[in-house]
Image (cartoon, rainbow, N blue to C red; front, side, top):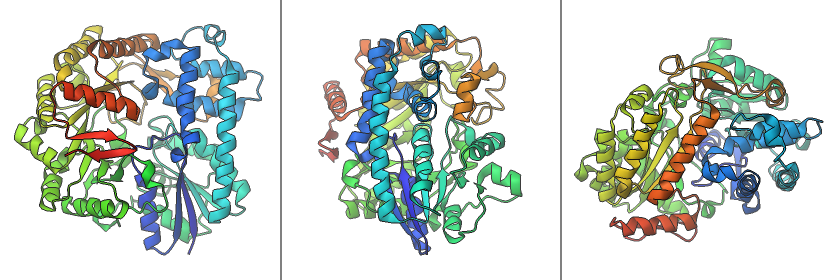
Amino acid sequence: MSRALLVVPHFWDPICVPLGISALKAYAERAGHEVELFDFNTIPEVFSVQRAYFDELERQFPEWRRWNAERNATDLLAMHQLVYLYGRARPDYRELVAEVLNVTAAPLETVASRLKTAPFDTLFAKLYARVGSIFQGLVASARPDVIGCSLFNSTWPATLFLLRRAKALAKGARTVVGGPGPIMGIASSVAEVSAFHSAHDFIDYYVLGEGEKHFVSILEQPELPRGILGGEVARFRAGGTRPDMQLSELPDPDYGHLEVSRYLQLSAASSRGCPFECSFCAETVFWKGYRKLPTDRLADQMVALSRRHGKDSFYLCDSLSNPILDGLSQALLERDAKLHFDCYVRADRTCVDAAKTARWRDAGLFRARLGLESASQRILDEMVKKTDPGTMSRALQALSESGVRTSTLWIAGYPGETLSEFDDTLKFLRENRANIYDADAWLFQYHPRGLAGSSTKLKGSGDAKARFGPELSRLARVDAVMVDDGLSPGDRLERLERFVATMQELEIPNPYSLTQWRSADARWEALGHAPRWSVLGGGMEATR
C-alpha cells in the first residue's frame, strides 16, 4: 500500500468539487492505497488574491476594466506569477513583467513606464508564504509516498512551486502532474511535453489523458522510471496503446475530506472527450475519442453523492451534455430525484423543441452554458459548429421560456473574422437579449497542433509567431504562439471592448460573484422568466 497526496493548486475557480482528483482517489483506494485530497482554492485568503490581482491590474491599466479580466487575464496572471517565482532576481525583471502585461503589442517602454511591480510582488509574496506554510503542514500530516498536482493554464506556476517544495519536504517522495498542461495545447505535442518535463527535474511523472491506471501504476511501482505516461507522447516513445477503459468500470468519485460546503455545486460527469470537433477546442485532441457513462448509472451516482454530502446541485463536467440530456432527464424523473444541474449544451436543433427543454427543466436543468462563439454563419462554419444563428436564437428561446438560465460564451478575434462578421454577433446580442441570462467573451487562443482545427480549418489562417521574446520563453520553458492573420492583438482587444460595451448597453450581465448572480437573477425575473432557482447564501438552493 502507498500513500498519496493530490492537490489542486491555486487558481482554479471553486465552482464545483474537483472531479479529477476525486476520481483518482476513488480508483486508487479501490486498489488498496490511501489518497488525501486538498484544494487551495477553498482557502479564502489564497483564492482572494486572484481578485486582488485583477483589481491592481485595473488600477495600473484601467483598460482592463473593458477587457473582461476575469476571463481574459487568467493566463496573464499565471505568466506573471511564473516571472515572479523564477525571474524576480534578474536585472531585467521589470521588463519581463512589462512584456507579460503588454497584451496590445505596444512599444514595451509604454507599458514599463506605467508599471509598478511592487504592489504585485507584495501580493505574490504573501500568497506564496501562505501556500508554502499550508503545504508544509499537509505533507507532514499525510506523509505521502507520491505527491500530485493538477496542471492547468491557471495553476501552472503554483504546481511548479508546490512540487519543487515537495522534494524538499518529503525526502524520497515521487511527484506527478496531470492535465492538459500550460498554454492550451501542450499535451498534443511530443516535443513540447518532453521539453517541459526535462526542464523540471522535480517532476517525476507527467500523465497525459486518462490517469487512473497510470496513477495506480505509480503507486504500485516505487521503482517506475521517471517519465511521461499516456497519450501521444507515450505511444511515440514506447509504441504502447491507450489504457482506455469503460467508464462503467470506474467507482463513483470520492471527495474525501475536501470541504464540500465551500463549493457551489457537487461534480459528476457522463463522458470523456467530445462527439464534436469545433476547430478552436482542444478537447478532442486531448482525449482522443468520446465515451459516455450509461445515464441510469449517472443518475444513481448523482443521487448517492447528493445524499452523502447534503447538496442537491450538480455541475456536469462534460464537454457537452446534449447526447445524454434526454436519457439523464428520464432517469432523474423516474427516481423523483429532485436534483438540479448545470452543464454545457450545444445550441443546435436538439434544443429548439420547447416540450423537450421543459422536460430537461423538470428533471433539474437550471442553467445551460451555451458556447455560441459567433453569429456569423461563415465563422460558425469555419469553427465546425454545425449550427446557424436562427437555430441558436430558437434554442435560446426554448430554453429560457422553459425556465433554464442561458449562459452564453463567445469568441472575439477568431482568425479571419471580418469587422462585419463581428458586427453580426453584436446584432445577435441585441435581438436576443431578453433570452440571454448572461454573456462572457474570451479572446481566441491559438496553438499550431493542440486544437481540433490546427491541421485543417486553422492551418491556413496565417503564420504562427511567438507570443513572447526569447528570454521570457526560456523562463517559461513553453513556447506560446499566436496566429498572424492580419488582426493585431490591439484589433482583437478592440473587438472584445466593443463586445463588453454592447453588453453594458443592453444590460446583459456577466456575473462572477454571488452578489452579481443575485443581480442577474433579478434582471432575469424582471424579463418575465420563471424564478425556479436562485443563488442564495453559500451555494445553489432550489426555490421550487
